[in-house]
Image (cartoon, rainbow, N blue to C red):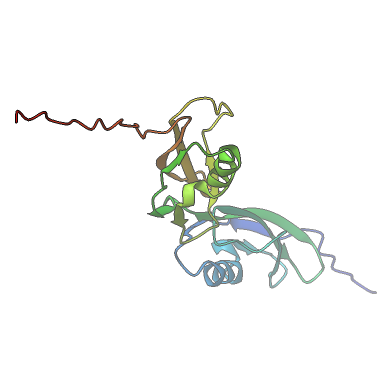
Length: 193
């Protein structure tokens, strides 16, 4: 007589993974690796033997605002599986820092002033910003009306998480010279002889 014992019951998840929230200023890759090795602190039980874990995710975390959905799969020795999910979240709450403010541009009777304006806008008025966790993305609030002078423009330094800093500058294009021509009158004084 042959008695076959079949295990048709998948492992039972006793404790779900705990979502991890880490600052972008930390060693994100190491923390992610540690969290994965610990199965997100999840636990599972199987009546017939040992539980082994594996995991899947679509990308490793970036050193910026990011969320990775990880599938933790608990498997018994018969191949029965139970899946559970957890999130690894990289948090960035710090805005980029303006380390060089926008420069005013002052032109006088310049026929190429529109080209100068385009260059000035493209270079965000020569301002500079730094972000410890991400690339800085620049924008401005100029709407295309270049007939006004001065033009007051705000430049925005933004990261992927929506944190933002700003700097302001003026673009001035004078249509006529400020120089006044003065006619000098030579006076002679008559003297009685």
